Image (cartoon, rainbow, N blue to C red; front, side, top):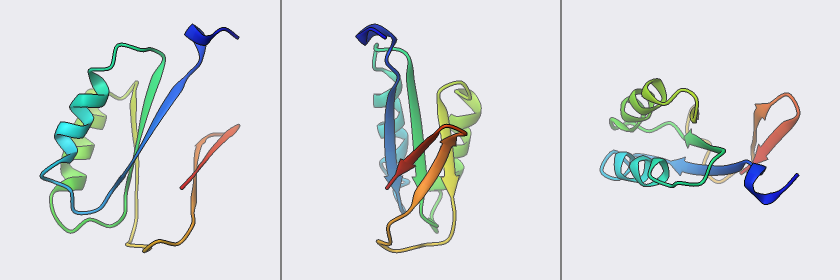
Length: 89
């Protein structure tokens, strides 16, 4: 596999970041490198972060995935990105 074909994964942790999450996603989407995936982990935000994330994920379903759940603090965790890949946070 050559460098051009290598998938780049951007993992964005998010907690009550409604002020910044749209700008962060726009910056990631503006990257010219492809293939690219953006994975947003919302850790139980109580503001509008999740609504913003969902809107972007709907508009860019081929690039943006998200996971959400109750606030888990700083406990180590992993998410399944695909059956053969796990992203650890």
